[in-house]
Length: 321
Image (tube, rainbow, N blue to C red):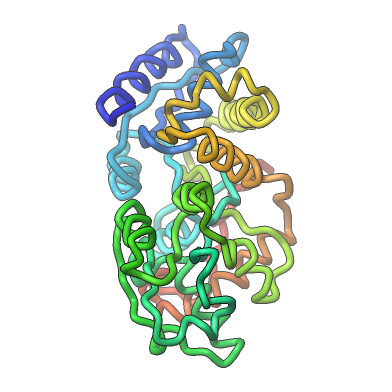
């Protein structure tokens, strides 16, 4: 299914999702190729908005940056983004807040016959890095390297690029390893490549024992306080939709075209990684773990990623209480 077809499908299902009477409307910014689109499709397919006290209207986004612009302009109420950006915006006086969407975090991959078996083996090698020099996974991998006495920033030849291009470069042996997002990591695994470290394992090996979300719903705290019941119902509904996609093969088959994975092995691995990213715990321990991760990112990113403050801002994580 091509991009234009995806936009048509998403637009069609979202127009149906948005039909309601006087119910509060949640205006969502949605990337056509993102996993939120999968869940919205499952909500539509299984009529999960029936008898709910809210409705949904969507705006299709080209990328995450477009989502941030849409949220800041007020054209949408909510997007999927990361808590680091939320904290940096709060440090500048905004009242954005975050609640978890997914723990899926990507990973470091090599060919199965690669001589790279550890971080030390990356020395002198070409490493493809998705997301640029301030990518969270890259900063955290550097932090893990430093704990092991390895300065990855100095010892590897860095190749920054878009995930699809980096996958091609790895398969054509123009780079030796790739640090990429979870969907693209799953595609490589389907082709026989080995995940040396997952994003979750990087965090764990840094000594952070509780799970930390990679992405979440971001909205203004003031908006959330005014629409608390609708927001909580929406979060419950999306959790039900994700569980259906993970537990019901028929439900998964209905949205499989939206994954843009053409072969059964890729589809299976993408589903597996998507479901592994379900957020089962979100409490004080997880939020403390996020503060620890923030500390690593702040130091290694020279505050370029985290913003002015060296500490995670109060209110970054939304509470319904």
